[in-house]
Image 1 (cartoon, rainbow, N blue to C red):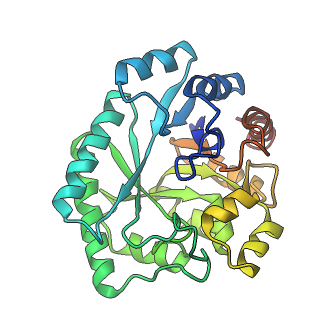
Image 2 (image 1 turned 180 degrees about the vertical axis):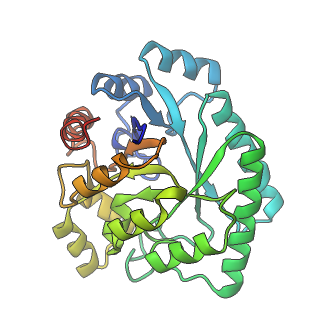
Length: 295
C-alpha cells in the first residue's frame, strides 16, 4: 500500500515565469493558504526566503515542509561543470530544508518560456548527439544527488525535448535507474496527448514524485488551433487543479494506492490567480483528493 504525502506548488499564487501573475500575493499569504487548505508540503517559489532559518520558521509555524524544488538544467548549452556547481548549491539548500527530491528539467533548447513560439508546433527535437549529452549529464547529476542523500527526478515538460512518451522512453532507457528517476506529471502528459495511464504503469517503480495537474481540453485545443505559446496557454486557463478539468484521476489514484509508492503528490496548477483564486482552488483540489484518492 502506498504511503503518500500531499503537497501543493506555489505557482497557483505567484508565477515565476510570468511575475505579473500573482505579483500581489506574498510568500506569507501563499504558505498560510496552503496550510489552511489542508496541505502539509510544498515546492519552492521565487518569493520564498533564501535564508533556510527564516524559511524553516515560517513553514514550521504552519505545519508545512518543503517536498522538492524545480531545477533548470542547461546540459545542452552550458559546460557541465557550471551545471553541476549550480545543481550542488540547489541540492544543498533543499537538503538543509529536509527535502529528499530535486526535480530537473532540461531547458537548454526549451520553448516553454518563449512567448512568441507555439508550444505544439515549436517543440524542440533532440539530435542523437544532444540525447547522448543529456543522458550522460543527467547520470552525473543523479549520482551527485545520490551522494548527497537526495533523489533526482526528471520532469518531462511541454515545450521541451522530453515531452512525449517516446522521448520519456528514450530518456529512461539511456539513463542509470540508480541515479535518474521520473517525475510523473499528469497535466503535461495529457496536454501532450500521451497515454498517461500506460506511462504510469510502465514506470511506476521508477517514479519518485507525482504532479497532479488537470487540463481543460477545449482550451488545449484552442492553444493548438491558435498556435499559442505555453505561457499564453497558461494565461488562457489550459491548466487547473484536479477535479476541475477533463482528466480522470481515479484510475491514477487507484493504481498508485495499490503500489509501494512512498513519495509526494503535489498539486501543481498554474493559472492566473486573478481569475482562479488560489485558496478557493486549493480547497477544491484538497476535497477532490480526499474523495477520490482517500487521502
